[in-house]
Length: 266
Image (cartoon, rainbow, N blue to C red; front, top):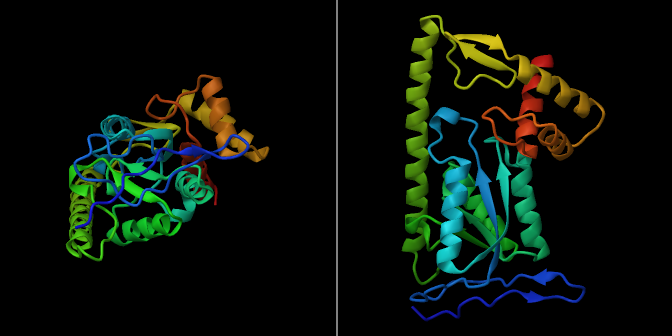
């Protein structure tokens, strides 16, 4: 296979903006093959919490370690807290917009299943990124040659096989969870994973959480006044109101809570 030229460091455009280099590949054997290449990092948190093995903190740590090893620069982290339709993923839209604008050279994920655990959706998203002139990188050692190569058809085959295995593993995990929930519900307990925001589970029963209910009322009032999910997240964080697991609010997390309560209201 011919040796490919390593990507160049991003250069400045007139007016002070950065023009991100579009690396096509990385040279094998280079100690820091992506030195100076500017990327956006994408983190996705599954709403299927019990099936989640790779939380946001672990994803961020893996990406930072990978960037240090390869020499890549991370422009910023973008997080989605939904497993819904692609159109509902605000963070993913931001990633594609920055690649389209040329401000970054591509996107890095901790694993390809952070794009989606559905292999067909993974392939669709990678095709979108490549079509915009960007590159997709994964920190996983078994996912380090992602782009299709006409001289190496096995690359696409292995990538798709790995994606299919991940998808199968997810479906088996969800099957075990469903079976467990059915057994728990049959015994009369709360059987649907993490309680929705505003509630807590006490002895298998849902109970209102006073603090979370107060946060929820503020969130709904701000939304009714026309505030964006990002603005709501900023106000809740400034007010010291934590998210479900005690961390800060993100735009995607606010959107998820609002969607849940909109469905309840309807």
